[in-house]
Image 1: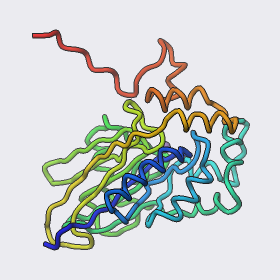
Image 2 (image 1 turned 60 degrees about the vertical axis):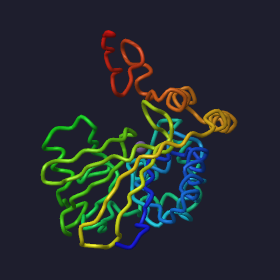
Image 3 (image 1 turned 30 degrees about the horizontal axis):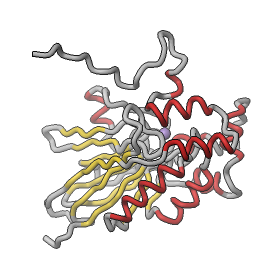
Image 4 (image 1 turned 90 degrees about the horizontal axis):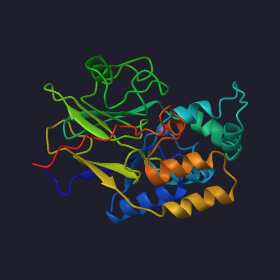
Length: 269
Ligand SMILES: [Mn+2]
């Protein structure tokens, strides 16, 4: 084994939150990690999609398509939503084409395991798989589809999209994990990313690790930028960044609900 092992930082769902992205990149740089792969959703929800794209084009070795990256700049769609139009107008010339041209998935070998990364699921960036998925959905994440192509099937799958990180394995050594979100983390709103560590490009079994990293940042500075730029849906952004409560749940019947329900407390013994 050649130590130190190779490390890859996986970031996802930055969603225009440049302040959070800069904090996470500083943490990645501080650890001396040089490879950064992005699992998509650069834009929407937050105020600085254009700057986030510029930084990721410069810093990320791999950039993957997200659902917002696909639908927001779609030239065949028109929107009557003022908010959607605002986020679209933030993009610089050519950025919409760059987003829509991103690859669906990225495969590589790490410590004898075949890793596949994509945004939301093996079939589409618009099909969501949450942490409480069933067995069929779990297995579906490892299947080849028209979107992933016909390469060797993966034994490790990493994805984003839900803004809700987790790690799960089965007895066949299949490993599924979700990176969580840099710019719009739910429940715990602290930005989160993943470090994969192992022997890159190797078919030989070797130590393999998945580390989740939480990076605190200046939430109020990010909200001040959104306010200054006149971003729509500011109240929703405040809810998500300060409290980790998804904006769609703010107006739900019965009041705001957490993405995961709060755990019932056990009586003290
Ligand atoms: Mn997203």
